Structure formats: C-alpha cells, structure tokens
Image (cartoon, rainbow, N blue to C red; front, side, top):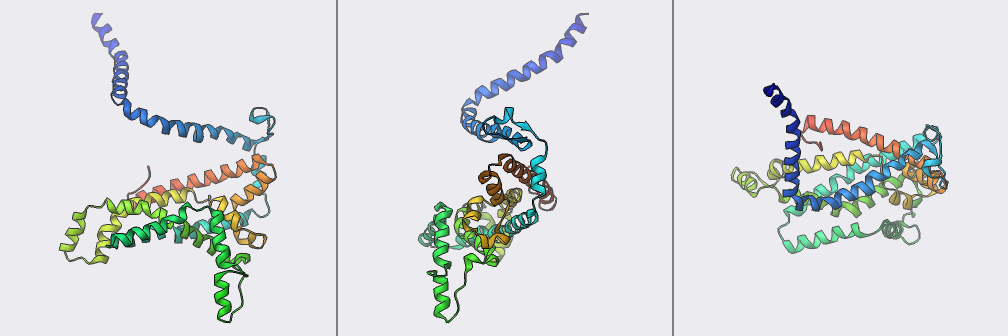
Length: 319
C-alpha cells in the first residue's frame, strides 16, 4: 500500500517542479523580462485590445450607443460592400498598384544597397546615403508638392522642358494613364533609401572571409555578387517580400488620396480611398470595419500561401 501511495504522488509533484523551475528561470532573467514588458504592453493595448472593436462590422453601429448596445445585423455591411457597383474597379486598382510596387519598388532598395556596398570612397558613400534617406522624413503632402512642381501644366519643370523643345504640355496629374506610374515613382523616391538600411545591414553581416575565398578562386565583382552577396541577402529579401505580400491590400491611404482626383478615379480609386469616402465621410463606421476585415483575411491567406511556397522553394519563411 505504501508503494502505491508513493507511485500515485509522483505525477502530482512533476508539474509543481516544472512550475518552480519556470519561476526560478523568470526570476533569474528578470532583467530581460522587465525590458520585454513595455513591448508586450504596447502590443496588448494598441494591437490586441482594438481587435475587439471589429465586432461593429456585424452591427449597425451607433456612436452614441457603443458596440455593447448597437443592433446586430449579421453580414449586412459585407453584402453592401460586395454589391458595390465599382467593387471590381477597386479590387483591380488595388491589386495592380500592389503588384507594380512589388515588381518595381521592392527591388529598388536592394539594388541601391548593393551599389552602395561597392562604393569605396566613404565620404561619397555617406553623402549618397544621407541624400537618399532624407525623403523618408518628408510627409506625403510635401512629396505631392514636389511632384506638382515637377509635373504641373502651368509651372512644372517637365512641361517647361517639353514646351522648350516645341511640344505641347501634358496634364500628367489629370490623366488616368499616368496615375499608377506617378504613384510608384514617387513611392520609390521617398522610401528607397530608408528601406535600403535593412539590406545594407544584411550585407554587413556577410563574413569577409567568403569574399576573400571568392577572390582567391578568381571570382570577379559580378561573381562575388552572385555567389556571396545575393545568397547572404536572400533571407532578408524573402522575409520582407512575404511581409509585403501579407499587406498586398494595403496601399497606404495618404499617398493615394493626395494624388487622386475625379479624372483619375478609373485607375486610382482603391479600397482604402473607398473606405474613407463611404465609411468615414459617410459615417458608416461598420462598413469601414467590414472592408478592413476583408482586407485582413485576404492578406492573411496570401501570407500563408506565399510562406509555404517560399519554404518549399528557398527554405526561407517567417514561421
């Protein structure tokens, strides 16, 4: 009987021992957990708690009643969104601009980082880095002002050059066919330098011994890039590309809204601008939330698919 009692007590003691070990581990590394606390608190308060507000996508939300007393309407706002006459235009414009951003804007900082890495004059390298970083700190309003001064029909430098060569001025900002090109080009100019920081850091992490071994084997600068630099950059490239794919439905409202006008709606009206007009200006907060949920679900599904494809082909993934 004593043996049975001792045997039965062992499973109860094991979890206690595990808890004590965990507690001792936390106490021993309390400084690290203390530093982790502000970050955890930030995500809890500003990222997870606001998720509770997503319930208003299923309510006829009344700002005076709050989401606790507003009427539940099921998928009413999703049905209104999916039956919107110009929904196809919104989806196509959003996906096309995102695709062009991935095709043209995403490789730009990688190319810049590789070129900067080849510069041996440090003073010139730092000057170029400073010049290409600066646009990141400008607001989109200021960037739009620069673009207007460049492309305006009346005072734009481009149109003045066209007229000086005997041509007719072109209304770049009022023509729908130029809208996506202007959005992509201005985005590259503003963020290329800042985004290159990550890739410069990744290049700096590559062991110099790999370059030395490549030079001993007779590799020129191009072969060093192909066989040393590019493989070293690949993990950072794949992770950032996957994160970009996860936000493929988010174009950033501010830039699109500033450049958009009634003449460019056919190629520039996207989900974010429609959500602003219908949801915020129209007071339909539930509709705006429904659009946000739709974008989040699509982005999550694309991220899962892209992550699996990446792990299957390159072995890199974000989880």
